[in-house]
Image 1 (cartoon, rainbow, N blue to C red):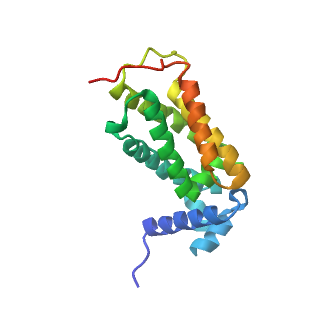
Image 2: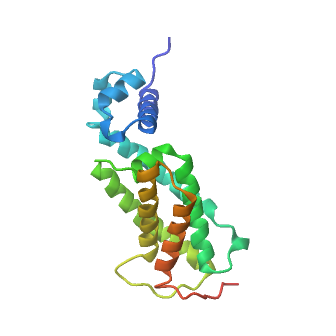
Length: 201
């Protein structure tokens, strides 16, 4: 019988963690739970991850790559006529992504005790805000923005708070709350972006 590689063991660990996160209270998952689910000794897991939070942090790296793909595929150029169109496309794409991904719901929308995950999410929002800024600038000449903030980062964080409210209440994002997030982000961005900006040729 061929000996299992370390990469294969790590994959089993990650898969076990995902299954547990999707089916249980994330705050109550331990290294020992993941050990049992994966069929791998807890000592092996501790060798790579000193605490369960470190496993979750690793899973977040894949989630963040998925966010990049969501943004990359969100915009339909022929449907961009004004900047609110971009905002709606981006938020609609993120709503769809959240609804289809229980792992992301549990890690980013639920109430949990893992501060490092929240910190990583905030850092990733900063990175995504820069990408969103570049998307807007592909289509519009955006006015100069305040030097102390990225308005698109704030907009993304605002939408996430709205989604989180509904998820914690219902375990899902309702259509009504999804629309509220779009309204809220558009209202916020309109403080900095004129309602009409001529689209680039």
